[in-house]
Length: 332
Image 1 (cartoon, rainbow, N blue to C red):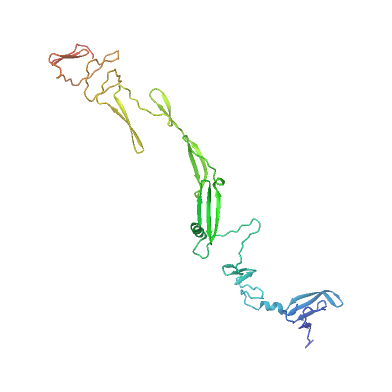
Image 2 (spheres, rainbow, N blue to C red):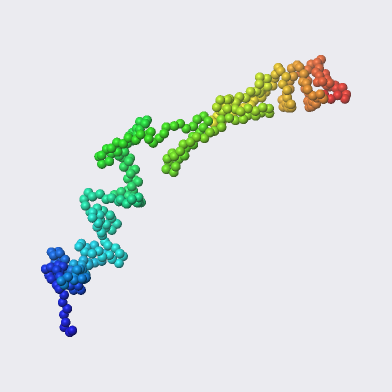
């Protein structure tokens, strides 16, 4: 078999050969850009009819190897995609959409870019900025709203005028569609307002408050309505006690005064009476309702105002001129 040469079918003008036996090879060297099926290696396979296999399979050729003649990781026109050792390619294009580094863009002028998930899928984005890395979408929306949106309204509706890029649109929002007019709180109820973390009023309810207090004395008690009743301090016409009510800011003061000269034309009654000043009795008697003896402690008696011919008497105790007499075995 020395110097043997194995030859296969070949052509530089035709593509897929018209006749190719099963297991037979054929190569087309015709320019693939000018001849269909050129620059390809074929093999016949399957049953034959008149010496021609039912299948002519393409198993290689210059048409394919030319697509692999560039650097890995570099996208090359009319060539296969060969990723580098990091499984990366420098850029990629799908229709009008281009991926280059960290930029996603459209490659056709005035072409919109849509991010549309299928079904119930959601488009999730975070930390969004507008035009550059200095203006967040939050700052952009606030600045746009402040400079381009005017809000006017009446009692029942709000008109929002939007003017962006010279396009003025007016929207009317009916407040009756958003709010339900109502009054919360009364003389017996206070409103309870719930506000969420965003400063929005979520619920408004009411809470009933007590409007009565109980007032009790040594005898008797009554309920006092804080809405209709007035608490009045009454000292009586003959007690010699007065009440003065005054206000200072949020404080209300009730001052109780005892007249310095406690005088009466009636008959006031005291359980215990202690006097730190002088006691003057103009006529009448000092009496006790006790059935036993009246105990009277006298530390000093001054009677200079009594004339030498007058005298005064305390029960069984007599004072005349400069002498005090008292019958023996008497308790006054």
